[in-house]
Length: 350
Ligand code: ATP
Image 1: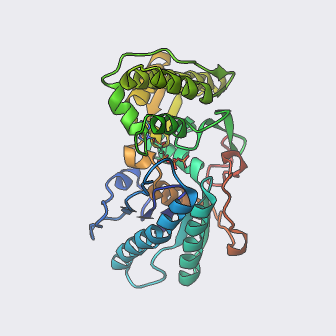
Image 2: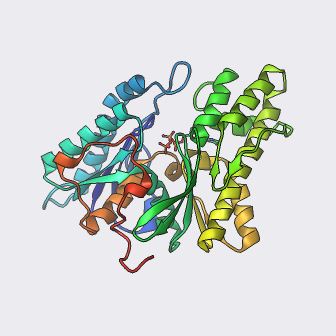
């Protein structure tokens, strides 16, 4: 089975063609210029880069308008080159249906519909956050992990129960990456701020900042205001970055540990662009080690927004017959993971 995946929920457009169900093969994909011998292809455009400030939805959509067709065309030509001549070039088209920025999602949805209709193959509407979880579950071989999704616009813990991924805990305000990006904008750094926080924190001394966990939920707005106040008061920015990393990631680690404890699960996977941060992965790995749980973080290109995870989940949805009629394929900027009926897992899994 060969599936085209299309991603473009916010600022990074990519397309992937996923050809087998071998998790190791998925790791050996090619880069921007496809290797004709590779089973899988993963084409990423340069992400949208705001001139100043954060992501502007209209500008991001303008970027998607040219980036999405470009990556889709390259991925499809790769699939065509490997095609044996019988049947369509791909067997299905999977796309990020949400959550994300509405103007960007609409471009992704339009591209997916037009390819699916042109080739007369099924459409697969993938929940972007469930795809973050599933790529970790798939690559790790874990049975039923808890997932910490730490991305730009989201921060939550997911666990499977009775046919759905339940939200066990989540942010009460902004996503974790967006919170870091807001602080870095305040100190004059360009988007994205997360990697710059990580680099600066290496030279910083920890500064205490508010730690806000309430039950299974957490909040970032107070800590970001306090971090901005520290910067305005002249505290060295690397010190604030060190305080931000330790505090925000400790909050996520605490709730991840509680999610493992409450569900009785001993497997944790990480998803989302903030998961590229080495200190976050270190804290989660240490926590899991201490309680005898296993931890898996996909490699960076499968943590940030990527079409590989969309194609890989789309393949399993197609195998389960979970296709989407074109007339019902509107995108959903607020598509929550617990709205998804998980059709691709065994009926006997609880
Ligand atoms: P979502 O999956 O919620 O749609 P998104 O579209 O914003 O998220 P992602 O690629 O998942 O995209 O995550 C991007 C975020 O990750 C940005 O906020 C960025 O600052 C943050 N980020 C990237 N690298 C790092 C890092 N090394 N440390 C901390 N944050 C990082």
